[in-house]
Length: 232
Ligand code: URA
Image 1: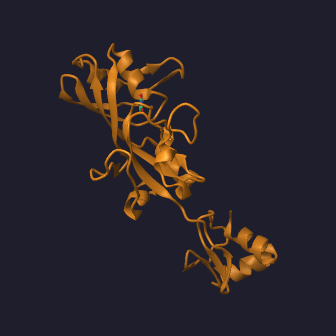
Image 2: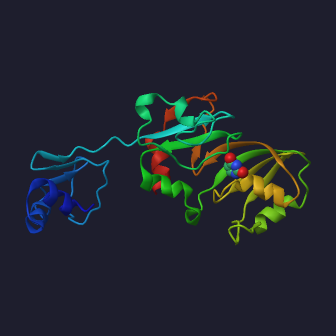
Image 3: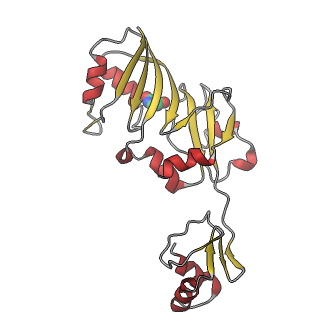
């Protein structure tokens, strides 16, 4: 919502009066004077006018979880445990998952209550790299890297995946960087080249790397630097 609208809604002044107060430098957003009435202010920002708090600002939550195998990337499920159950109950309300992992997959999972921020992590259009360590049932054929670099045709979506980078680590082990996060994307890419994924571990999303000190099932808040890397 625009700053001028917050002032006129919460402070009982006209839009014109709100614009005047803002232009006079009497409004702060997150403690900084803001003189642009058109500034977009989200629900996480605090807004104060002439010493009166119009909006306290909800706490924004950004967490990284080391997802263990066997947990569903969902907020609730009747059959399987969900990743939410790994979090302290008071943290759970309002959180969503920014880029799911399959039940058997492990590694970096990001949870937040900030939908605008998380969209930047998951929107295929933004092409943020996601890095996976992959184990396969059969040796990875030499042409796999080239096929992935050219993009794999996904019939269901009628699209070609963005060029992906495959780094071979062993006969049946590789590190794969993809730039979208489509449904079962990694499994479907290997299936398209006649192979099968047996284990999948997400190491990184954008500049956010899974913290090596977090054991499976543990989580921590993202640092300011980690969250800032996504918003740039
Ligand atoms: N691609 C998959 O196939 N599964 C995941 O869990 C993540 C990416």
